[in-house]
Length: 234
Ligand SMILES: O=c1ccn([C@@H]2O[C@H](COP(=O)(O)O)[C@@H](O)[C@H]2O)c(=O)[nH]1
Image (cartoon, rainbow, N blue to C red):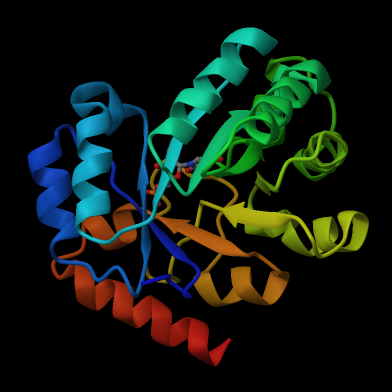
């Protein structure tokens, strides 16, 4: 059944058994699931197949960042897994992103959504400065977002702090996928550019990526329900 809620739960677990145990507490009508570097490195494509069998759409969050040929081939391999969404780093540049969109459009059959990571939500201005980017996250996100849009990507990963400005600058067509979501009573953990679920929706985010506030809650399904209820009121 296609899912019409905006929540994507991040399954950041060390192995498949705990990820599947978490998935079994959740309802595919209420959320999609994200498989990231830790789980995919330990468990590989089999865990994606197991999640598909349970009715979940999967965002494969491996944030590919390499030369154009290598990145595009990795994106094609992700498409072959039947995932709903896959991503690359916009910092890989125009030729890399063009290679990815070309390879997806040239293949037959299922085409996942392809989105580009702009500036990680764990980074703030001082972190950017340290790596030689002497502008505010908001400005860098818009620069990379525009580049990804020109390359034909379906959307961006950014903080919901930037969603409103991105809608103004780049329009309503791009999907804005926003991690760094924290209910007002939750710990920020290692995230810096955080936003509450309701505020993220109000700002124009398309999807909210939420990990620990759900997966580390005493009752994950109820934590998800509370967030969905908050979104209904937004
Ligand atoms: O900029 C980014 C890009 C990806 N992520 C991923 O989202 C989740 C967030 O998990 P929380 O537990 O809710 O912090 C995690 O899998 C990250 O790898 C991100 O946080 N920021």
